[in-house]
Image (cartoon, rainbow, N blue to C red; front, top):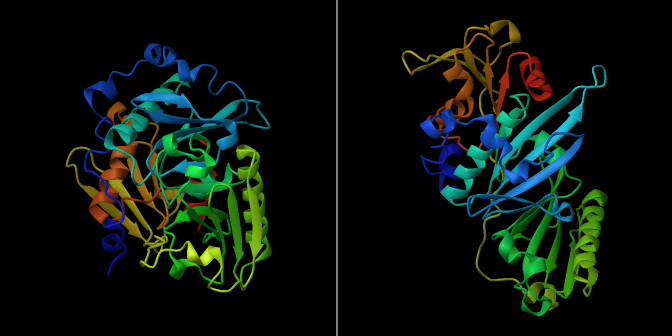
Length: 361
């Protein structure tokens, strides 16, 4: 079975999930309207990270203590601001993150508001779209702890009395790039393997199960995560388990049903595609190998690295082409059956180490 077919049943992406991009409403976005958004006050004015959550069409600041925690029923906007060491100028990367159970309204608003924030910052940011479970390395690098949690933020731990918690099972494991990711998985015994570390969170009691073949980094990450959770709740106990019998409470709280941990798919093929605005057809220029010499300032190109998709917008491209980078990539991925891949839009002249790396690979 192809990677696209496998993921299609796990992610319910609507064709209209980027409907606001390229619409009359999006085309008429003005800097004045961006300046009237209270959430953007001070955004991008100093070095650092800022996270917002979309709630009922509104942009809400996400508590700094919860940075790195993402609920799969929500959508978020993340702005990273950094300074060029030589020029002292501020640069930005702005991402919108889509939880797999986020509503169409939420991720549509996140996409629209990302464009608005880009407008406020005079088109300086590099724009990114992130999909749960397939985030770019750059996105995950912002967070010391990266945690994926079931449900929406309103049902989060700090909103529920400890005695009312529904037990949750978290897996701590390295992704293919070595980043330790904390992910809530179905509470199924069959998913508890000896190669990783797991935490059963019961509210007032947390069990850390260290698989026999797990590594010290995963174990340390789980311990730190538990410490952070306990500091939020005030009253909670924890215990570390290794090789406990099946009669232990840790195993008794597991469901008998089979579960799916929803692992990432394999990397696809590398391609360089030229976007043709006149014919609305994409032209595959190269497969396998490409370089910056293949790019031209008058055109727009889609660069598929197999693990991430970049839209490179030439400096002489039309206004419409410059505005619709993410829709170009979204349509390409939808047709190729890989709509979960990260998307990054880079205008000619912008700094993007990830694209430079992809072009040099």
